[in-house]
Amino acid sequence: SAFSRMHVQKTWSGIMNAPVSLDNVVVAEMLWATYKAVFTVSVILLVMVALGISSSPKLALAWLVLAGAGVTFSCLALIFNALAKGYDFFNYYFTLFLTPTMFLSGVFFPRDQLPGFIRVISEFLPLTAAVELVRPLFMDQWPEHGLRHLAVLLVYAVGGFWVALALTRKRFKG
Image (cartoon, rainbow, N blue to C red; front, side, top):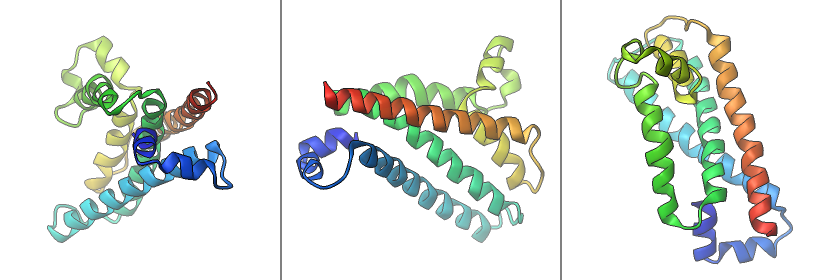
């Protein structure tokens, strides 16, 4: 947790004495997490190209989509960050959110093997949207329903950011 880490390291005390607002700190944390995601995605895509796994010119577009997914997941993580009472709280984030999302999104196996109602639910998960956008681009194809998947990522990013901002404000005012 960024805020837990900042509390333990006494970073928060220093920030509160600087001319920045709480909102600025939340935006900075979102941008930092996004940067880490973009860096990781860039390295993975470079390895894919170097190993000849994909040489599609659409990888540039996949990079943009994955950067957007980085924004989305950084905003969602900030919600848990605002709720965290300590480091152990993040087990809930991984166990209750990320792990089920990975299994339902089509990363490991085709979503058409899922029961009908779960497949419908999985259609609206942010990782599903990212997978459905990026996988075809890796294979030099265009994704089906691209605008819908982009909308899902956008809704989670914007909604996640505003919820995280509201929860963080509430946490530090009360």
